Length: 198
Image (tube, rainbow, N blue to C red; front, side):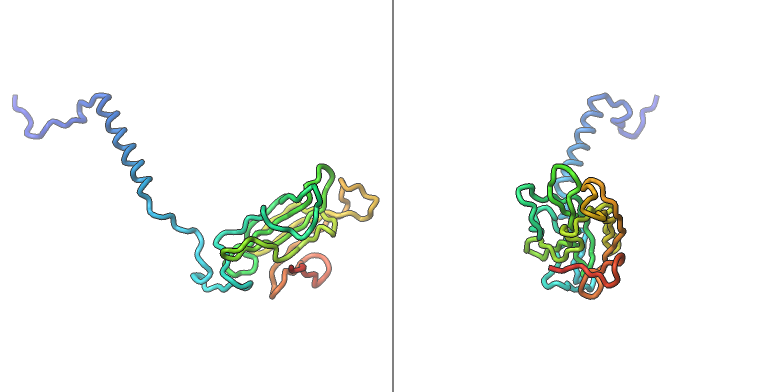
């Protein structure tokens, strides 16, 4: 009988120890590859890469500001404030995202009035409120809140009189706001209604 001129192939008669050693070697290679990753690429480009310019002075932050630690322009006393909802979006077209926050007093019951605020943050600065779309003094509750394609939309629930229980708003309005020129313009409600900037 003639023997093959080719060397014996190890895997043709492999034992379980061989496969365990192979699996351990592969795990080591994968772990080493994970440690040697290049720096993470950023998902957003700066405004200058898009040809945009900041409209509020300074460079916009690369990520939307966190609405949690912002000083909102209303007082809730000892109850404190809570951010009920928030969403990011580039509302003024400057290439940097703003955050729109629905904020209300942290009441234990009932339907506390809400405010809708636009929060921005410039590089190296703390986030701050730059516009009030709905003031809590209007005594409105906010539902169906969205930010999409530079437009803020919400359903506003209110009361026709002081006799209506605060749990049960009896008025409803669909509203939306867009940045036009140098102010947020409300597209529902009285004509020419603009948001108060701070």
